[in-house]
Image: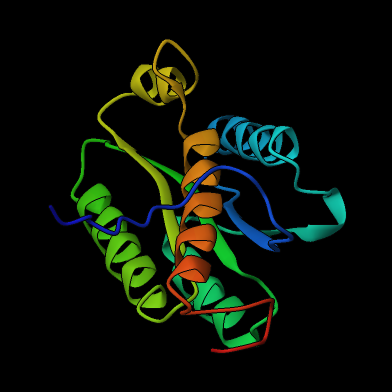
Length: 165
């Protein structure tokens, strides 16, 4: 009988440093996402001194700042938070699409960049995902960040900040 070797991350902070990039546009939603992310990180042992929050004008600007933070190599994970709510024009499709592509590209190395951008049809759906019926997607993104940092360390893909990248 063979034993399968399985690796997965967990939600216990082991000295990770986290950056949270937050879009100011729709801040009545993104502020709640940020609160959820900060609460999750704190409850899982991340000290405030290991968290950096960066505000950008909107979701479209998230990718460039995420890339800059990855390049600076001072964080083990970057969390992008935003809210793009569909309106009556095609603007939603462009902003949501470019934000998703850019955030994905920023995370193409060994520093995970977590997509915590809500893309909803209505304000009510955004509110539900920012701390009411559907939970808080900011907190979920923070959990994903901790798990990915731990998984990458277990894989030997990264070490403490700035080591092994």
